[in-house]
Amino acid sequence: MEDTGRTHDERRAGRWTSVLIMFTLVAGVLSFVWSARSYWLLPLASAQGASIDELFDIILVLTAIAFVAVHLFIGIALWRFPARQGAKAAHWHEHLGAELTWTVVPAIGIIILGIAGEVVWAKVYSAPPANAEQVDVVGRQFEWQFRYPGPDGRFGRSAPRFVTSGNPFGMDPSDPENKQNVVTINDLHLVVNRPVLLHITSIDVIHSLSLPNFRMKQDAVPGRVVDIWFTPNKEGAYQIVCAQLCGVGHYTMRGNITVQSQSAFDQWLQSQIK
Ligand SMILES: [Cu+2]
Image (cartoon, rainbow, N blue to C red; front, top):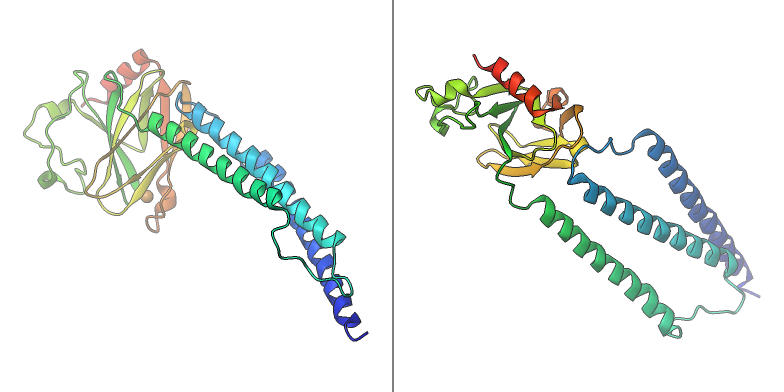
């Protein structure tokens, strides 16, 4: 028959595609196993992070199941039902039930995940507790600066007209309250189990304050102050990175976080007042 050569080619193409699909499946699973061993989430150190990690795990499991199932289905179908002499593919909606299932089930799953994401988002971006420690944060090329209120818990006056490269917070030099404020570079101190409210901005380009152990990340945008809050719940030393490519020195925007007891924090703050 005239068709035989073409059918043969199509069958071979189908089988090779099946092999490629299976290769993608195996490579995908192996790269997951490898990265899960080498580059996983850093140890969790905030109260809010638990629900973020939970949602992350649920999404990971669901998408992993879908990834494996879809690749297996396509791979097996391509291998098992190749082009046959004289047989034509069917295009009518014979299996309405099956079609509905693979449309409606994932759609419901996506809606549920969307709602779960909104719930976690609302929890993370909610109003901060009244007892939160407050810290001003400014990103600049190429460092993070932090400003703490003095022992009386008050920030001095600040205004954009006082902003210079040596005074990125624009602290009014005539306000004595500012003498009690503490400014640090790449050094953030937090109190364990006490919520912290960060007021984040930038004085040049867009940076992004990334606190991976606390599962927090917020862009620092010039001209805007964005608040985030969380509760560190494990004492220790952690790192800050800038998650927004902000110039040639971007990689140097690393900082340290120290989560410590209230008394150790008070002592440290006192030692920083000039
Ligand atoms: Cu940056």
